[in-house]
Image (tube, rainbow, N blue to C red; front, side):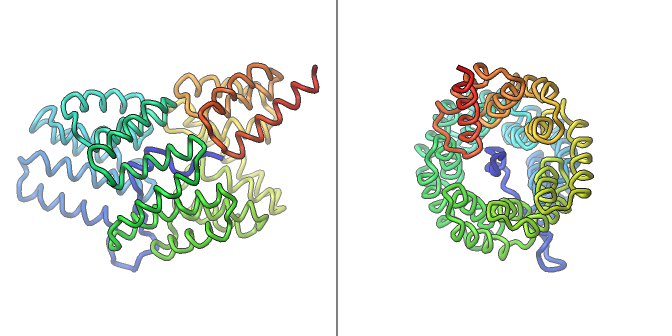
Length: 384
């Protein structure tokens, strides 16, 4: 299962407001309106364009609409025309790169910013995010520790530390950090609290604590009805409970809100488990078409597509080609796990085990990784 709270997601906390009262603006919409008003009053002030770009990036996360990133980039262009290379604009540019999954470029820019502003907590957040997504976990941990050293107890530092705790196989420590972040969050920041509750629910799910997971996710959806992150985790919980019809409904809601191929793949699997074979086939075909279209880009559903080729389409060679392509770009544990599974599907178990040893060395207790490791070890033992 792909991690539901990537480091880029930690940075660009979503603010989906489709379930809010009619006429009530989301936090990002409020910020967009404020920035545009500031631009009208002071069209030669670069920071107003930076503020608009950042608000548009947050709105992109609210809606799942990548076109908003293009609008944000246009706002930044105006900022840089007024003041070339201004630091605040470059920081927003780093946010955008992370939001678009351009992790290598984001890391490069974050390093440059770190040289210019070595005590900037947010810049260390960029370094933590980019390095974690690329699989450079020691560098990510160093950056997250700097955040907490510079400003003890800051919420972005706590959430990044929590993410890494889970990666390193300590979901208990991750849960403690995430609860700490939740307790420190302003009660009026409803979306931020819903996002944190979603992560808390996810960590309870990882620990097998279904009742606690459901409680956290239910509260997240109360704060932000139809919140797509919470819908996804709740759908995963329903799959574990074998409540297939409920899972289908939740995944359908999420896909309607954020129609991306990585959100369609679990829906297709839920439809299959629910016995809705024709709809599942249609969903898998649509998923393959959408995921293939974006497979060469950096913001893709390649990990899901690899598993689809292996487990549903019986095309292991195609899965391996894609896995080789993706693992050349990033070496995070989930990408390496998919690569190992593709090697296994092609009968190359010693190489698969080698890749999984790299994953397990990080410390992860991810159930999917563990099941893959067991399957590969069992076949290697049987072949001796």
